[in-house]
Every structure is written in structure tokens, then in C-alpha cells.
Amino acid sequence: MAAHTMRAVRLHEHGGPEVLRYEQVPVPEPAPGEVLVRVRAAGVNPPDWYLRGGMTTMPGETEATVGLPVIPGTDVSGVVEAVAPDVEGFSVGDEVFGLLRFPSFDGRAYAEYVAAPASDLAHKPAGIDHVHAAGAPMAGLTAWQFLIEAGHDHPSPFQEARHRPTTLDADTTVLVNGAAGGVGHFALQLAKWKGAHVIAVASGTHESFLRDLGADRFIDYTRSRPEELVHDIDLVLDTVGGPGSRRFLRTLKRGGAQFAVLPGEFDEDETTRLGVTVSSAQVRSSGAQLAELAALLETGTVRVAIDSTFDLADARAAHERAARGHIRGKIVLEVA
Image 1 (cartoon, one colour):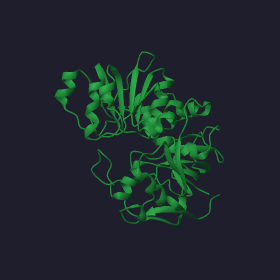
Image 2 (cartoon, rainbow, N blue to C red):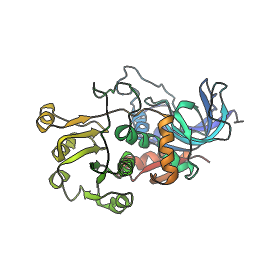
Image 3 (cartoon, rainbow, N blue to C red):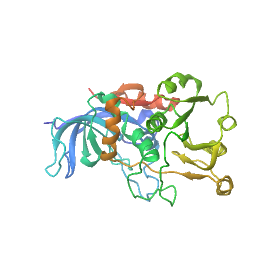
Image 4 (cartoon, rainbow, N blue to C red):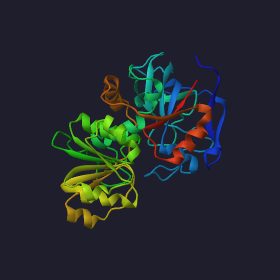
């Protein structure tokens, strides 16, 4: 059984990476429906630095989901240490991974132990290590819920209509903007798994990496404008967002769609005139979907790219790496 105290990274105030404190805290007790996981690795994701910077209210919520001090982090891979009496499907010693309590800022993954909802977990693929497993949940489930199956009926905070993935097959052409990042490199591989023709957009340093993952065509956005090179696209998955996102509408055929992983700026009259749609969604924890993704990870059909790893005590350095941008795959914290 776990000790009474553990090491964890906590925020006592908001600010830059320097506010991440590595300190001694009590080991959590699993509540009903939860298991206690001894953490071996924790993924680093944008909500972690949003929380660190002062964002405590999730899109669509009216009140903060956490208070200080708080342990950040949602992506975890580790070993089950204890199981609540009402939990079935997991036993002590099982290797598991998951996206915890999302959407919220209450994942608590930057720690030696975490109490995790069993419904958020799946058995870790035996063929990958904890570092790669910890890099998969949020980015992999985001790509899955945008492209394969939403998997829930919760309304999106970004639009009234429910997000519905489009059909992906050999007759589909998909452009992935930001293809080298966490969500982007999963999206590329899932689209290829479904048989689609995939165009990857990223900086030139990532070309060989993305072609190795299966990209049929590569566009270096630092040298060319994708909207001037490609047309009649069925689907654009944009992981970058921002004011320049609407330029990709011009690459779509009539009836095509642009999926916005991050907020962009669009004009309803323009999308109507072009005969295209724009859709967004908010990723949610799902152990069931993660189990489906695990099967693809086990066979190597989908791979997790690791940008860099840091010890848990060096979470500040991990956030500093994230702030420099141009991330290839995932940043992961290792727990001794």
C-alpha cells in the first residue's frame, strides 16, 4: 500500500513556470468509483499551463472548477495501487492510463499517486511504456472525438449544434494543420487508419517525421501558403486556431468541413457562401474510447511521438519547453 505522504507539483499562486512547486503532500484516498494509481508518467498539456497562468473556469462553465493550492495535470500512466469496493474491471497491479476528470482543471496527475475515476481509465497497452502511454490520453482522445466518434451527448461550449465527425475513407482527403503537434500527429494517423489521403501542414523541420507517420503530402507553411496550393479538400482539421484559421475554408470543396480544435475566427456569411461547415467540440474523458485507442497503440497502427521528457521535480523546465513552441508530439513528466 502507498505511504501516507508523496511528492507532487502544486500551484499556490498563478504565474509563470516558476510558480510550480515540488513538495510533500498527503497521498489521496480513492473515493467510490475510483482507484489509486501509482503514477509512472504524466503528460503535459495546454490546460496545465492555462491553469498555471490563472485560468480556473472551463469554457462553458460559470464558476471555477478548482481552488488553490492545486495539483495540475490530467494525463496519467501508472499502476493500480488500491481499488474502491464498488469498482470492477481493475485490480491492484494493473497498468493503466487515462485522461482524468476532463473537462475540468482537477486532474491532479503531477504527483506520485493520484485517485482516478475508474471510468476515465483503460488498461495500458503492453507494447508501449508508461512515458508513451502518458502522452496519449488528451491528444489521442481529442483526435478520436473530432474524427472518429464524439462518444457523448454533452453540448459543446463552442457551438449549439452537436459535433459530428465526417466519414473518412479512401475517397476522403484530409488536411491537418499543425500536424506535428500532440493532437495533429494523432489525427494524421487516425485518418490514415481509416484510409484517407492526408495532407500534413507544419514547418519544414517536421517533414520526414510526418511522412514516416503516413502523410501523403507535406506543406511547409513557412515557405508556402496551403490555401494557394490545395483545393477540393473534404476535411480540414485545424489544431492551431487563431485569426488565420478562416483561410483554410478556401481549400474545401462544397459540402466540406473544417474542424476547429482551437478557437478560430469565422464569418457565417462566408461559410454559407462557400457551402462549407465549421464545427468544434470539447474533449471529454472516456476510458471506453481510450481502450479502443489502446488497441491501435498495441499494434503500432498509431504511435505516440515524444518531444521531450522531464523528471516530475523538473515540471518547471517542462513548462518552459512548452512555452518555446514547435513541439513535436508530447512532453511528458517521468515519476521515479
